[in-house]
Image (cartoon, rainbow, N blue to C red; front, top):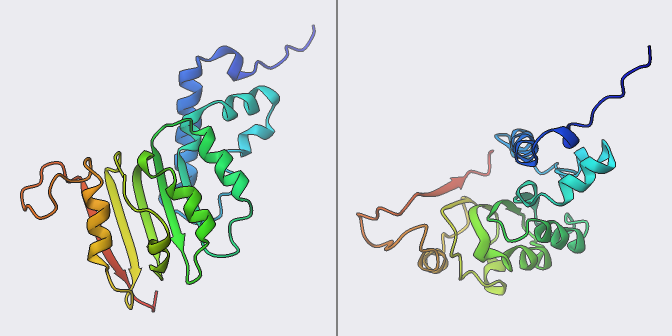
Length: 194
């Protein structure tokens, strides 16, 4: 009796189901701990087989969650970052961005060039000087914005106002107490003891 060859799930399961499985795996791998040690996600399943690699590289949903440390010297390749964003093929983006004392303005420029696709943006910043070098207008799809700053960093209400005014899905009128489309705004201060 011959051994039956294992079946590749990508050959027998509907692509929508496989995509959802990969997407859930990716989210489970990233959240809730959100660290900046996931440079191989979602590439890791590509090591299984050629069909898995082809599936991952052609599934935009798997490339929409970007967790990155955009401090000077931490982004290994701007081309790889651009390619990752290209693979999302215009799908809404969910970003968790850490910016240290010395921001990588080139990496931030690559990320914020796609700001019209940001659905969710979490920024952890120490220094906001890079805001003057990057356009922070045109967040047309932004539904959730979270900003974590160090205690000594001024809030820059004018910059936040620019983001809010260019994000119709985030809020319709930030000055109005009854803003039904305001989904979430968090402004937290981190102490230097954490």
